[in-house]
Image (tube, rainbow, N blue to C red; front, side, top):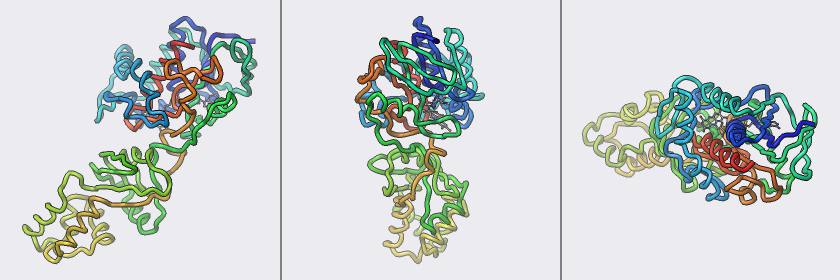
Length: 394
Ligand code: FDA
């Protein structure tokens, strides 16, 4: 039987990071994945340029039922530690906006870098390997795999969440956690577009599909994000929508301020004074695309020359544009979600070592845990940081 010190299940972001750092400590590390390629999500990430971290990473950028859990690992392996690795490998990068660091070239630069580090530190990587059974034995774990039986002292679960099954995502990590007595919190898709079914609204989104509105404020359940939104055939997307989706529960309304940079009541009154014969539709076309202005004027407002609006009517126009309330029918789900919210309850995992408090020698890292970052490089930073922390103890 193949026996080693550490077996890591999942050669994604967290698995690749944990493997190299455990091997650098002198541990014999075997990294297994059922997929035919390591790090498929890294390759797909950031529109092919991998938003590998965020300059402003802090615990407040993460959702979890246990808000303090992420603090220790994020402090021990920061965004600057990862940037140092990127610089060491001469990977060119830039800040796109809001502290988001992207590759200048391709995501494969990051994957290549991680694979080189694994290789140089002696990690053995085996792809196309599925895990059939895991048993706790004296001094460690025994695995039945498609490549035969294997045994290790420390077993690390880095199999990620449920988003994008076509990239190899499975609920395997949750099953293992349950097998060893862990609580798994309900999961749902996060950083995901909304779908709309209300006929008039759906028609509006469909007509405007591909149109984005720069600089919107989107709010739900006490959270607000300021970024752009995008109309799609199915509903709404774009960074502000993806961010708020992580705070949205079925049935909740979201509120969108389409023009947060303008004091609308004041501005509309000024325009009424300055150009009373201009139609509202024409005025809105200075703020949105002509098509969007026309559709809004048609569906939301009775478009007429500004002088014909009463003060109350103008106020209603301002309110609709600054506080557009809608109830999404749902989300596009795991098919397109960037992340999975919920997962393994961190109250049963050490925030220092990432070891299970139920099964000694078993570790959980990355997205499989109930820690989910905002959009903008935070999810990879969590994968790197949690993996680095666990690697010191496996
Ligand atoms: P990850 O999913 O990376 O790896 C899990 C690995 O486990 C996979 O290789 C999988 O094949 C393997 N596995 C699963 N089940 C298994 C089983 N039963 N047996 C063996 N192996 C198994 N984040 C960010 O910070 N910046 C970004 O730009 C993006 N962009 C982005 C785009 C898209 C399209 C998606 C879907 C996601 C992102 N993300 C992101 C999120 C980011 O990709 C994600 O949070 C991390 O990859 C999570 O790292 P993990 O290692 O935990 O899981």
